[in-house]
Each structure stands twice: as structure tokens, then as C-alpha cells.
Length: 588
Image (cartoon, rainbow, N blue to C red; front, top):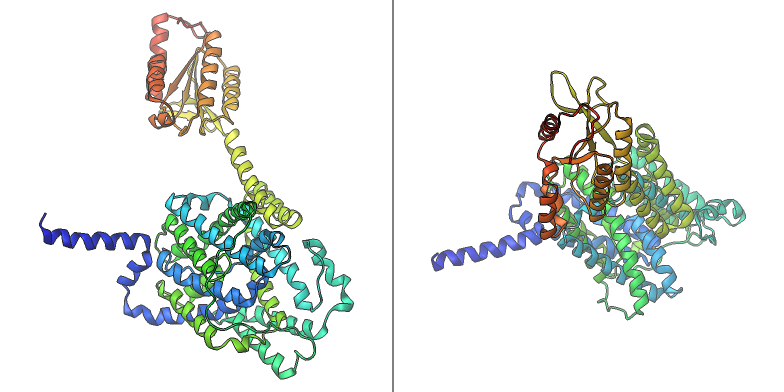
């Protein structure tokens, strides 16, 4: 290779590395100018939706409104560089904000400054967990929470959010802490409801719902907030006791200083950040995947972990709170024809302009208008359609979804996350511990061996039991495997001389399962029955020591077959050699 070729190859390798870690750079390198008009329209539309939502969600997170603006703005720039979706918009999310407040509220002890510091630590920890997960290629965690359980969790979050906004919508001071007391509190405090606040809030709520249905392409949240500002100023509602947002600081946030906390507090925050990352990534990646599918391209799920991590680190450094993929803002971007990550940069830049020059009007936003925005957004989280589908498809999975929702409402947000994870694990164990199995037989004129339950005309071979276990063989289902083999032997119409296990569905086996199989082999041998294995995959050996594997191969090679046909031929050959009638005990 010449020096000139080496000089050309080096920039190409650096460029390729940068494009891999920052896909946005590659997207911008091949940007088509014809996309600019669509990206401009989409970016400005997203900004019109994201700004009022960010301000509103800051209340859910328990922080000043400007913190919500930081969380809405700076993650967009980070995702534009490190994310792989061309449509996804990141930012504040109702469920994420509720989880943050539930996690750090008890640790802050009522100190607002400490609360903000803890929030930023949690945001940065969440970002680091995302990035470590991306580097470790843990994108498969997006499939960890099943759809019914995730739906149930988000439905519970939606109901908690709506109940929590009733006090601001009605203008009374709330005291209840849990969901059900919050739900009935308006009835208990009818005399404390501020009529002007309630009338304004309900009017804006109705207007917001109407705009979303009649003109879905318009930034309905921004329009309602502007109407609220105008009404407060025109009717003098602030002087009549209608609460408003108050002063919103202009300009960039001050540089973040990492707070010194006790080790135990870091441990709790790290634990909760891991749960938050799991739930928010699972929710956010569903949004990203659905819009990628709609626009006919594939996502790199591991890169999305890194992109979400960069978003959260950007938000944390700007004193913002954790963020994830935002479905409503992504839908706006897609509806307005956004073509690339530039739409996110335009949206962030537009909100930066407002942050620098137009924060004064924001101080007059009525709190009841923000409550209306939050209630409508939370109602969008509640997925009635999914519940109806689960009812039609699987009542069991509907039950899992409803139990998760009740767990969130009764136990709280963070225990609800734990409950969702436990239910997912229980569901996986339930499916894997008692999997379907089959006794196989032959059908006249049809090749191969077939499940006798599904094919009543399939005939078993006298003296031979062909058995298939349709799952991986592990410690939690090995006893069930033994029980099913014994039951199949007992149910056989003729005395069984050989049991041949079709291992083709088994992709993972552990030491406990191997010991159980050996136990079963000895148990059957004592009864004069041979246990053989057919079609097992070499990949099953990857977790075991090579010397042990070699010795075992030598021990069982006489009853280890590549195909079921080979096992049947060996059985017939052995019977012919022994001259045994069906049911006779085979010689060793």
C-alpha cells in the first residue's frame, strides 16, 4: 500500500467511526436540500407542541417551569446527532416525570434546592445506564416488558396524572397523597373550589379536545395556552385569584455542579434510574419503531440506547430531568412531513429563541391551562383500544394488564415498576416451565413424524416412544420434562422399549437439566427402557467445559442420533438383532 493510499484510508476510517457513533452526522452528510422545507415546517410545529408540554410536565416532575423548557430543548440536539430514527422527537414524558418525582421526593426532605440536585443526578445516571446498555448491546431489553404489562403500567400512570391535576384545574389546595383520595378530594372540597379557575380550566380543556379532533395538524396545546394568557390579561383573572405560572428566567441555565451526597442516596438513585431507563426505553423505542416502520426503514436498537443516553446527559447538564421518545411530538413531526434529524434541531432552536427573548408572556400562563394540557396528554396515554384487543385475544393477558394498573394505583409508581417486572418474569416462567410437548407418529403417505394430538391418523411405532419437548430445557422445567416423559410412557398403547427425545426445539440447556436427564436415563434403564436423544444442536454445549463434553459424547454416543429417522432405524436394527417381540426387555 502506498503512502497516498494510507492517507486516503485514514480519513475514511475516522469518518466511518464517527458515522457509527453519531448517525446524525452521516444523515447530514447526504442531506437533500429538497427536504429543507418539510423539515422547517415539521420543526416549528414540534416546537409549538413541545414548549407548552415541557412547561406543563415540569409540574409533574416537581420543578420550576424553566427546567421543563431545558428538558424540552437540549435533548433534541443530542438525539439529532446520536439517534438513528429520522422521525423520533425526544423530550419530557408524563410517566418519566411521575417516576422521577416519586423517586427523589422522599430523599429531598422538602428542600427544593436538594430536590433539583437529586433530579439532575438521576438524569445523568439514567443517561449513563442507557449508554452502557448501548455499548453492551442490550437493546433486547426493549422486549422485556410485554405489551399488556406495559399498557397496564402506562394506564395506571395516566390515571394518577389526571387525579393529580384536579386540584389545579379546580383551584383548591390539595392535601391527599394517594390516587383514590385524590380522586374523591374534589367532592370533599366543593366549598374550596375557585369558580373562575374551574370555569377557565374546563373551557380550555374542552377547547383543547375539540382542536385535537377537528384540527389535528394545528399546535392545539400552544393555541390553548395562548388563549389562556389572553383571557387572564383581558378579564383580569389574576387579580380575581386565578393562579399563573410566574416569572420564567430567560437565557441559558447555569453550569451544573455535581452535588455531594451520601453513598446510600447514590445507591437508591442508581436503582431507580435503572427502573426508569427500562420503562422509558421500552415505551420510547415502541414509538421509534412504529414510525420507522411507517416510513420504511430499520432502526438500530442498540444505537437508540446510546441516543437516549446522550439525550439524558444533555438534559442533566442543562439541569433538566430525564426524557425519552415522545409519541405526540413524533406524530406531529411525521404528520408535517419531517424528513430527517434536522427537524429536531430546528425545533430546539425555535424554543431557544423563545427562552432568550419571549419568557415574559409565559409568566402569565394560567396554571389551570397547564392542568388541561396535562390531563389531555395523560388521557392519550390510556390505551382503551389495547384493552379491547387483549379482551378479544387473551383474557389472561388482559388480567395481567389490569393487575398492573391496579398495582400502580394502589402501591404507587415505583412499586408499580417492580410489580410490572415481577409479572413479566412470572409470565415468562409460566410459559417456559410447562411448555407444550408432543408424542410423534407416522402418517401413511406423508414424510416425517407428526404430533399425534394434532394428527389423529398418526400412528406410533410399537415399542418406540418418540417424544418432543417444545422449549429450552432448564432448571425450572426439568422436573416437568421428566413428569411428561413418564406420563407418555404410561399412556403408551404398547410397552415402551426405547424413548427417543427429539431435541430440535431445545436451544439452551443448563447443568441442572443435564443432571435431571441423566437421572431419568438411569431410572428408565432400571425399568429396561433405553433413553436416546435425536437432533440435538451443538450450540447446547457452549456453556460447558470441553473435557466434560468430550467424555459425555463418548458415554452417550450409542444413543445420540442426528435425525429421528436414524434413531428409528437403530431401534429397528436393535430389535431385529435381539429378535424381541414388542414389549420385550432389550438387552444392554
